[in-house]
Structures are given as C-alpha cells and as structure tokens.
Length: 67
Image (cartoon, rainbow, N blue to C red; front, side, top):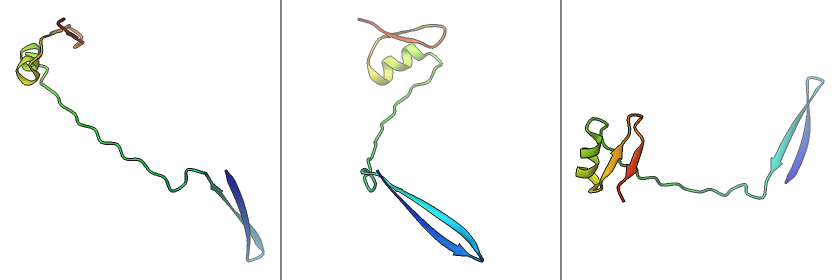
C-alpha cells in the first residue's frame, strides 16, 4: 500500500488530497452465475418435472433429496 498526500492552496486555504494505491489496483474479476428455479406450488412435482430428481418439501420450504 502506498499513500500520497498532495496539498493545494486556494484563496488562502490549504486543501489536502490523500491518494491510496494498493497492489491489487487495476485488477478485476468476473463472476457468472446461472440460476434455475421452479414454482413453490406443487414443488415436489415441479422439481421432478424440471430437474428429474425426487425431493421431499417440508412445510417451511426446505428441500431434502431422496437417496
């Protein structure tokens, strides 16, 4: 990390600018996400139809895979 302080006088007042540079400045990353969902109404059948897997659906919406 490197900090640079610059000062400037404007109308008799001093203004400071602090610039911080990090080793990772200029780096970037990209994130790609693919999301798939099914309806909550008749969720057990909807999941079987859409994804071909058997699940149990609890009253609170929690899914459990059949093993």
